[in-house]
Amino acid sequence: MRHGGRILVDQLRAQDVSRVFSVPGESFLAVLDALFDSGIQNVVCRHEGGAAMMAEATGKMTGRPGIAFVTRGPGATNASSGVHVARQDSTPMILFVGQIARGHRDREAFQEVDFRAFFGPIAKWAAEIDQTERIPEYVNRAFHVAMSGRPGPVVLALPEDMLSERADVPVLAPTAQPLSRACDEDARLLLEKLAHAERPLLVAGGVGWNGESCAMLRGFADRQGLPVVTPFRRQDLMDNRSGNYIGDLGAGMNPALARRLRNSDCLLVLGARLGDIMTGGYELVDPAAPDKSILHVHPDPDLPGSVYRTDLCVTARAPEMVARLVRFPKVGDWTEWVRSGRGEYEAWSRPRETPGSVKLEEVVRWLSDTLPEDAIVTNGAGNYAAFVHRYFVYKRYGTQLAPTSGAMGTGFPAAVAAALRHPDRLVVCFAGDGCFQMTLNEMSTARQYGVAPIVLVCNNGRYGTIRMHQERAYPGRTSGTDLENPDFAALARAYGGHGETVENGAEFPAAFERARMSGRLSLVELRLDPRTLSTSTDLDGS
Image (cartoon, rainbow, N blue to C red; front, side):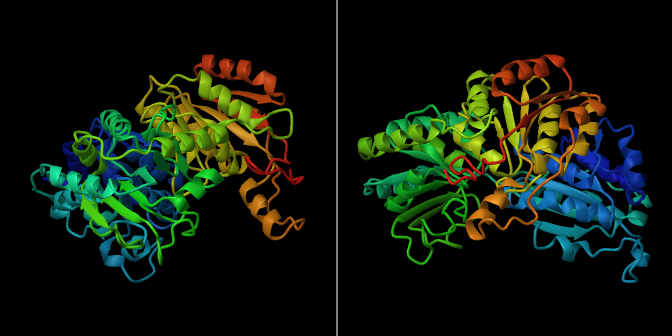
């Protein structure tokens, strides 16, 4: 006989889980008891949002569900931001939530929330385990749902009395994942339709990729002579140095690429979701009249055609389809189309000078030229991130870790998770002054577990993205966007890390090297000129 907490943790071990992220709560004491001698590392975080974001980042890196445990009520609502990131980013993740005792339901008991109703709209599946003997069934299903089709987050609520009860049930072996449906005939049909295009774009995104499949993607693009674009924050799927890579369809995309997307006559979409960021608010590709053929490969049969009509839809994981496509001979000649697209990308990648002594474009290009090719670069959300997207050259798969949902505060928890997962690799986090202050308390988590990401705080004293939109819509009427900030370098030192402030760009390389050599959690604050609004716009209108 095992108590419910032990049954659940034994199921996690059966799923090869080696690390979970948590903020402890009395509602799941039985789980904490079982974790004590389980061999599973319990990374204790400082905020449930940080725990959920670390779990989400782990799911991105591994392709298997990242695991987080939080308590009921405010613990769960705090964690909901990470669940939303996982949903929009198609990341496998499982959030376990301690819940009130079953006999206290519907009385507005202490911290009572109906988690099925609360998480239903943003999770792939939300459920509550009411019977201790059914824990193995629910956990197995959670892993299956999180990874099958279009991956996503699962939320399981755990009533505290259910966890403390005992049952005699066996450990359940993991459910086999569905086999890929990719076949040569589907590949032949895709290429047959592609052959009629004059201005095609290959859009490679989604999940399930690894170094080998990304190498095959490049081989397929090389053989066919196709221009490749990536979605928002998926730039590491294609070596940006390749002559076939022409940019990313992200926020603040290259205007020339936006025109190219509008003027294309065929989109071969491999694994990506055609959303508003990729399509410029659905204006570059109009759902009512797309004016181009769309060939869509995606593991979820319900997603292609849900917004845009498709000319051919193949239900398969993109990497498996690429493995088929790469075997076929060349079907068209798009040499000039690729050459001009590459030229536009290279022109866009040349730094445009911004005001001030510290120029973020120069910092990003220096890091792009200097960091090891396997360094992991993370970021949250804000205009500072646009400098990374525009000027950093991604060279390998698995080096970009950022939320396509545009959630602020995610970059630093992701960096902590990456440093835990890959202690042998350099991890660099870009964070805005507003973005970083949402989760900077996780510096304590980083120090506790001995990981040493380097954080670059891009401090312009404001919520820069909102100020940019404010100036466009209501010029000169500043409201709610200015920030009074702490001494970030001193704060890092207070957490036991290494901290420096850079006020002259020439000082940055030496400051970064000192941070790297410290072997500790490090922070370099970059004092930016507040006139800089974006990579293309300054406050003075230039």
